[in-house]
Image (cartoon, rainbow, N blue to C red):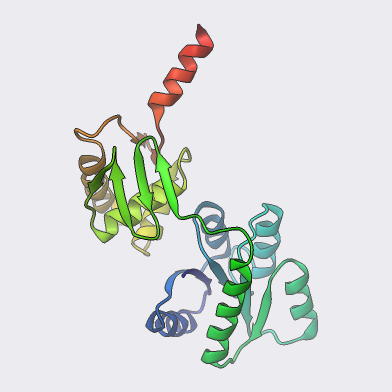
Length: 237
């Protein structure tokens, strides 16, 4: 289960991440409301845990914009604000649950599992991603190109999943660094270059058309431009 935890207090963030990690959850974090919203709009998570006192955008505004964008990810507000007015506002803007700090960790886990069960009763979870003949099986964590298996490291897999989840959309180098490495962009330019080159060698060289494209001065985009070129040529015919 892949979670996003938006919390600007490092101590609280570390405590929750450590506890959920020990219980088998895959947890990603951000301490900024705008950045968290961007992640929720561009990446795939099973559930969001949301603090209200965030910089850039507070938790209520993050929740409001998320629902305005029709992103229906189950969301649990985890906040020290215990007033009934705050709880009602959080639920009214679209949160699915509200837990007040301080809290029992077992109750947090129980509420997460409850939201997951409710979510499972809705639309089925996406189990694969595909671009041209490149296929990623999200449940087995297997990647194939033209039916042949592609062996990737964990970082390469995470990078490719991020690119494929946002196929056709340019991802900035900053977004990639913070999503894949969980750190600020500064100093990671070479790491991105190295991993992109390794990924290209594994999924493109001798395996078909180029899929990972550089957007000069911005970042990278994964898309099958061969199909786009065919459509453009047909339109000109």
